[in-house]
Image (cartoon, rainbow, N blue to C red; front, side, top):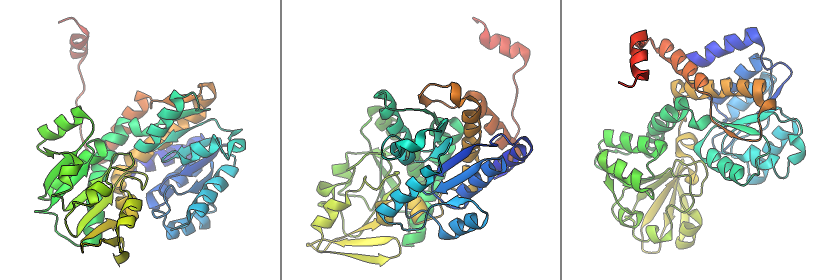
Length: 390
């Protein structure tokens, strides 16, 4: 993670977070741990927890604890334990939060409102979290400034498309040990994450079907060479289903009823609500853990529907998450956005803010340099031409 390493050296020298407390809730594995250490190197007092009970790595938690960091998480925590970990992280009374999915923000506007007294602002990592923040901001119920990290070019163009695209298939292939070539893969959604999943499936030799609610994205998927169907039609022919929409009830009882025997269902959205496991459990005569990360739901007619990673984020629960060189970009944006909040947050009104273009460009240029890639520059004549009327 060369960009984050450069920022760490800068932060060590400048100590921009001196005297500030930062609370982090992101999938708690090695790459996130490094982000926490980089912020601490810049003078921050850091408390950290996970954003998903199955993505938390206990060895990482232990290592951070040994480093003297405030850690509130463990793998496979119960829903009550998970909530308690979030609350403990907020009882730290942070000045800045780094959220993934909006759980910290929701608590700071509800049960943990008293812990928000010292909040300057925060940053949101993922698409689902931005959706929740926009809904809150539109209703005038966002009480402090939040930076939309997910919407930065250096985040969604690479992390969402290429990081998700690779890590989802890494996890599926590792947990199933099955071929992808020749399979019919149904991808629900065609945003940045799901388009990356579809692209990688095509590269692995699958026949790819996309389902969508947005007519423009349907057209985009079709012109990118994918078949576009309604989910009720795709459900009849798919071998592997992957949902990455950020919405609930994408795959439900009416779809389970017509699926092939031994289909695989996976989710790459933030919350485990896209595949309706309640519907599926009610339809099943028994549920059996067939191998790690794969639960078989046995239906009365003899068919088995396999759910990967308990319907949670398959790429992180059943795999290693995004590659480190992709997260280098995302977490560099996070670090510089946290710095922006530290410097400017007190003068910002409550609301959701785009990442300043200069931060996005700075990270892009640092990554290009780290990769040894060259970039052309406009001459003064070219700049004048582009600004002229022709």
